[in-house]
Amino acid sequence: MKPLAGQRIIDLTQNVAGPYCTQVLADLGAEVVKIERPGAGDDTRHWAPNIGEAMSPTYATFNRGKRSLAIDLDHPDGQALLVQLLQPDDVFVHSLKPGSAEQRGLGYEALALGRPGLIYCAISAYGTSGPRAAFPGYDPLIQAYAGIMSVNGHDGLPPARVGVSMVDIGTGLWSALGIVSAISQRKDSGHGCRIDTSLLESGVAWMTNPIANYSATGKLPRRMGSATAMLMPYEVFECTNGHVFIGCGNDRLFRKLLRGLEHDDLAKDTRFATNAERVKHRDLVHDTLEAVTRTMEVATVIDRLEAQGVPVSPVHDLSQVMQDAQIEAVDMARPLHWDGGQSEPLNAIGTPIRFDGEREFSDHLSARVGADSQALLRVCGVSDARIAQLVQSGAVQI
Image 1 (cartoon, helix red, strand yellow):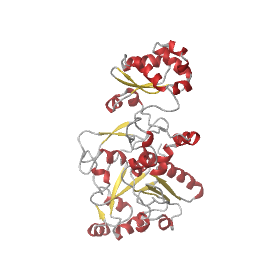
Image 2: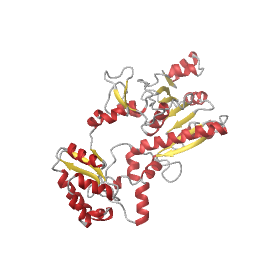
Image 3: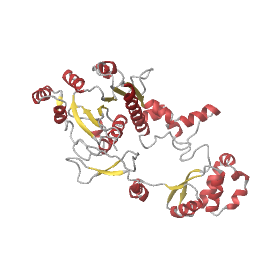
Image 4: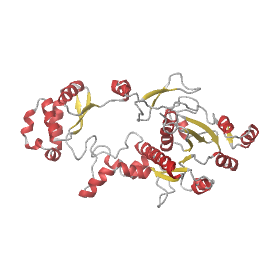
């Protein structure tokens, strides 16, 4: 089942947020044409480590399922060519700074003229209005600006970036959701629309719960490492050979935790009896429980608590993640090959959706900037003579 089969996406995005959006759409069956700058291509092609000519793991994992068309959008012929290639029911996605698309004749109003079914998605850093609309931004900048860093890390230490690109990937997901919704709506109305998403809006959305708590109490949240302010225990504990995360969402689970650790006597202590009291005496609860887990191996704690039905997990590193039987069972990682690439395939992570038990995974990857230019232009009716002229002028790379 490929829900977006037959839908073409014209992709003018780079880095992570936009490419993740269009990679998800490719997994759902869309044909994604990635527009790259002649020569350098997407900036992420050159991020470390290098695993092939103009190829990095970041580029490979966020751009599989796409074909590369190299057009110089600063060249008048390149701009005209892209407008010529755009079909009435295409989806057009870009991550140019607000105003940059319009300067090139690629704004929504210009492209939607004569194309009422066009779906146009603009991804920006800070949004399309306000004093910072024209500013550039990356994932960690927005983690700082939206307050994410203020709640991440450990108390008494500097603010810390969340170690994954959660703002970028979240923005990509919101963009993909907006596009899929617009495609669905277009089937009834025949009309497309403009969609705007931004890293800032995604960053603020991630802060929904801390903002709600702050609004209710007027108290700024503090950095708590792996813990959460609402529950206790709900954090990492040390063992003899690693760490475990234990999550008790209610008093019943906490009593089971004590039973699993063979310390039922603590249930009689009023400081341990309810979640409200445990939160109030957080340090005491943590130190008391960790004094027990520190005497056990990770596997022992896991076995004892799982036998009681207590939510618990080892803290895996990536080597353990990639060898884990459960992660293998859900079939998220697939090998990704490309012409001219390394001899060993790269593990690429699939879109976490299944249809009728099957996960769609688009694994085509253009190893070279503009590798698909000539074939794509021919399919769109551009003659070989015209392609030669465009190459000669520098507007296109093949």
